[in-house]
Image (cartoon, rainbow, N blue to C red; front, side, top):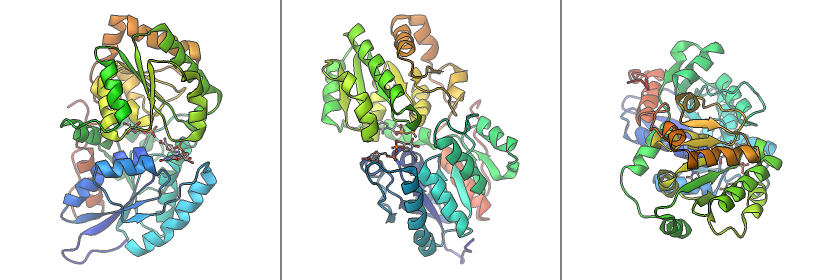
Length: 392
Ligand code: UD1
Ligand code: UDP
């Protein structure tokens, strides 16, 4: 661990590579920029490119290092090794007091390993999420378990995540329950009106005035192939069954996902497919939605906080809090089940109202501050924070 000279601000190296990591790390970068004893140094792996750069622009973050590793058709081996090798010299140059990773991507795991190899303490943001299946979600479940093994400071978003870590014998004093920084980010971008950025989305909003809206996103590796095809056919069936329904699908850049999801939706007038929306546009899409259909982790956290029912296109979730609270439901990727579940919400007012209660099991907007306080306390330059309690 590097030591501080009097008056120095200790460098905390934040490493991320994909869109959801960028959204969740951004509030921490901003908090570190304001801190008196710590300062941020940002390194992106570039596992994502356009989808990552969009977020950095929105939050006005210019990375200090960019490994630019993305290649089309990239594999888990390629991402892991390129990130690991690229980070060796970044860590050497920065000599960080700590290195922060977020969540469960392959960038996050490789960066935690890279830090460990130079005996730099690892901070894991969004620590302790678990399913009981090491292959689902794949490879995220294993990435986050491996990251936990390498971590010194576990920033758990919820009490349940803390309990998962305790069950794995992580010492209590190494865990801080912070809330999820995605809620900090969501609050920042929804706190003031912003002009719509994407022209297709602007047109969609005009056409959708006074009409119900279904927002759809899908990208997960374990859904590649047949499951994403089933989702696409279900969405097409919903478009035909409910001509008044406006369906928005911001398509993930992954060509494997696009090839599976887009063909069944061609020629349907009430289905609008856009490029990935920038974060403020996407938050506006969420706010305008009647129902959300998604396999995304982040969207599962954002929708309940906005009071929008979310149907989750997965068999398992590491985010059960909203399911328990009644705002989210696991529906899997069976075509007929998806059609039935969406239809129920569109046609049954009581079922809809029961799900459409704004609940905040994931955070209160102060997660980044708690996380930074926990890092400062670990490094001996601050006091530990009071933990997040969704009941208060
Ligand atoms: C990755 C993460 C996943 C996370 C998701 C968020 C891993 C193994 N997967 O999955 O955990 O939920 O990001 O979206 O870490 N592409 C572009 N431009 C971009 C982004 C992606 O062209 O800005 C294309 C490239 O062809 C790339 C492909 O998408 O090869 C797949 O990207 P990759 O990061 O490997 O997988 P994701 O499905 O995005
Ligand atoms: N998101 C976005 N634009 C889009 C779709 C999603 O900004 O077109 C945001 C969304 O609000 C959430 C995050 O991206 O915060 C989720 O990313 P993704 O679904 O790619 O990854 P996951 O959360 O499943 O890891």
